[in-house]
Image 1 (cartoon, each protein chain N blue to C red):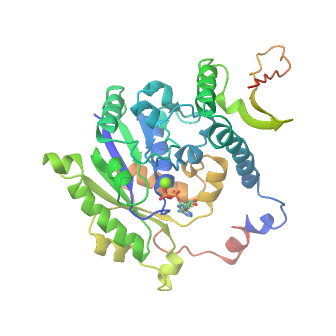
Image 2 (tube, rainbow over the protein chains, first blue to last red):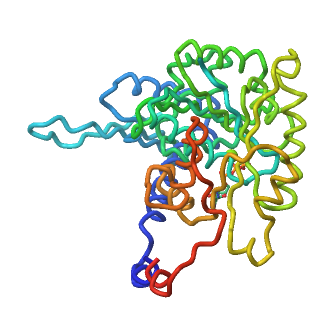
Length: 97
Length: 269
Ligand SMILES: Nc1ncnc2c1ncn2[C@@H]1O[C@H](COP(=O)(O)OP(=O)(O)OP(=O)(O)O)[C@@H](O)[C@H]1O
Ligand SMILES: [Mg+2]
């Protein structure tokens, strides 16, 4: 509603767009832009392995290529699904290359 | 029976991907097993519009190069049953798609029981666009009421009649449908935009529907959820009409005339 929109701050869909983009852009940079030649294939194979575990949603996997102290780190973050009850703590794994 | 439908336009940015996502979603909602293939190699974005970009592992080109099985590359939609996406590749190799490979994948999709195979074409009239239309049974030509778009649509109609498998094998002509998108009845009324009638007269193919210019399209692409899923918007209504019409139901054309809006309607609309 135009009248009420005026008083709202940021539209909700725009922040959703930004969240989605920051995740996918990080993944694509890690897979294509920088780092050693084998990185794209490595990332694809890692994701393919994760995809075999149907309880894990690939939408909950983030990938990042970081430079820390002169070495490159491929960071893979997997949010494991809650298995009720009781909900276990959220675990994440980091794979360093 | 499977139907291969290409969504094509010649001109870029007219709404092919938006249309592919909405029509594929709408057809699947009617219980038909449907797949949307992104033919825009190098610029993939159908997965973004459909909101499954994070679930892409393998793509169309991986399948063609036998680097992955078709089943591994197909993404099952989370919201709509019977709906699958085959994402495009990010490769810069423009020759990644060849008729043999594309034909093999389409044949395999038919074997898997897909009733509708929706091919989202890249812009242009070069190889990429020709690959997307090559195996089509039907074409939805997406056109904006704008000079260059109408001209390009006419060129695409020429290609559909000459550079496709059906044309080369002398089969029945590809059925063509016009989808006029980003239409603004107010601008037409003011004489600032070509009317549906004008475009129909110029292109001479049957009208499948008119999709209004609407901010709901941007909102839905922000969310990664095709507009047709939220039935309250004008675009969703327009695409729903198109889907039902396409599946053979009678639907009056809407969104052609400017809607009368009251003062309160404008304030709160
Ligand atoms: N009915 C509409 N109302 C308003 N904006 C629209 C509408 N349809 C499409 N758009 C916008 O137009 C832009 C282009 O749309 P889309 O990506 O679907 O076009 P395309 O033909 O697939 O482009 P390309 O040729 O680059 O593949 C997008 O920003 C989209 O949000
Ligand atoms: Mg597109």
